[in-house]
Image 1 (tube, rainbow, N blue to C red):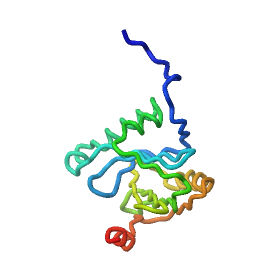
Image 2 (image 1 turned 135 degrees about the vertical axis):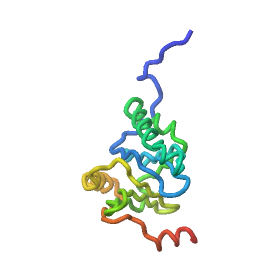
Image 3 (image 1 turned 180 degrees about the vertical axis):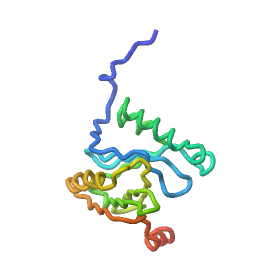
Image 4 (image 1 turned 30 degrees about the vertical axis):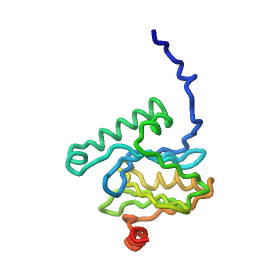
Length: 169
């Protein structure tokens, strides 16, 4: 006979989410969905769901998967999202050099760039942000409070020289 468990008795990571940015997508192949959690102890990036241009994007799988993960977060919280993610990347704030936010220009989607002091940078196109300036207004004080440089600017956010140096470096 199974016993029901009181949710208050389940283990918790005690991660306090200060800001969640959902429905991001990696910029390199294979495409992955990502949710970014700016928390009390750093930035947690939960990557999930491999996408292909035809069977993923063409079939709108990305929208279904992002909505499902949002529901997981709403019902069960950040701990369950981190458990269900295929990959979780954690950056302590003191290990981050900077975070950037670009509005996407006229043709692109907004982009968050995460630049650790050492190691590879990561970029995520945001598919569910309607007001980039409002997001910048939330990110700026949060990151400043944790001592992380924040840069908000226009354009696509793609720097060919920096990308080539990273690729060949």
